[in-house]
Image (cartoon, rainbow, N blue to C red):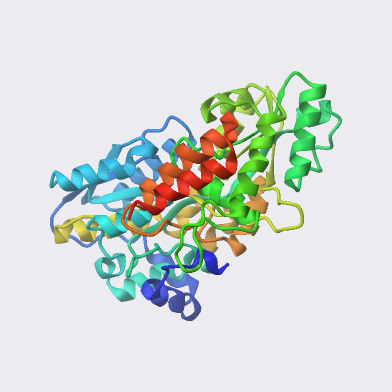
Length: 430
């Protein structure tokens, strides 16, 4: 696992010490109202707010509940598409009008921490209050989420999920497969997909490595599980190494063999929702949205990410952290109260039960949908998200996804040559 820990220095050490020395109960006072003389308004840049699904409804409820508990703080949410969150934040910082709190995807946090004025959450909160709040988090989550290159904690773990296999149990039965025995390996995934394609009118499988949010969390999860990494333990870009070639060649083979449609994620999700695709490998955070679409049509089931041969599956996570950019002292204080509330025990119970994301605090673990039980168990072995080195790490992700993953997985490009070209471009960024 060393290859996933480069650049993760002592910035979070105090958090990990706090986890072992403070009682989890200390984290439960985090929804106390703010003692403030004057009303204050803070802005919140969010890619989840405004979505017309359980995620959007859930975050709207969290914001409303916070304002009820803290009547002197008004939160003005700003909706932004997932892929544009970092760009929007950058442009608002340059314009001198940054949001006070910003939700940033983990694939973009490392670059944001090195190029934008993100506040140290511990400094904004005060060390005692910070330690009390962080003590309630699942320890493995804290070990997995320090931001590469950041000397201080700048992103609070918020909405996180690992990749899973969503599958249509009715199509499994129709294809002669046992819905109680979902595929455990990539080879079994292909076999099951072939059976569904041969014996039903549906497509077999779609592995959403080509992510619409321009994240490489699933690419990384596949590469990790194939025994590799995108970045070595010494910080070298290893995008063109043998395990990366193996991982993407395996997913390409699904397309070439005809069991995976060569379409974008939206088309694949639409096919799955209408019962015309047997399996969809994507973030577990999609559970409630997919569940709503499946109701009355087919039985939706969930299985862990399949392994490569005899190697253990080693998924990393998708999702986001909450960052504070507020410059004004009163706004910064209110921003911390907001971040603290959005990540307290009760909020994570709602995030787990009504939004389908992982319960990152110990007190919320029993709130998750039972079908995500395997994903909750996998939290104990959560693999840190790996960022490319330098101040253009997100550009590296975009190059990897657009110049390599998409052409290899969906368009039959030669994996070795394509990854070699992408690796050279990523190395040339800094």
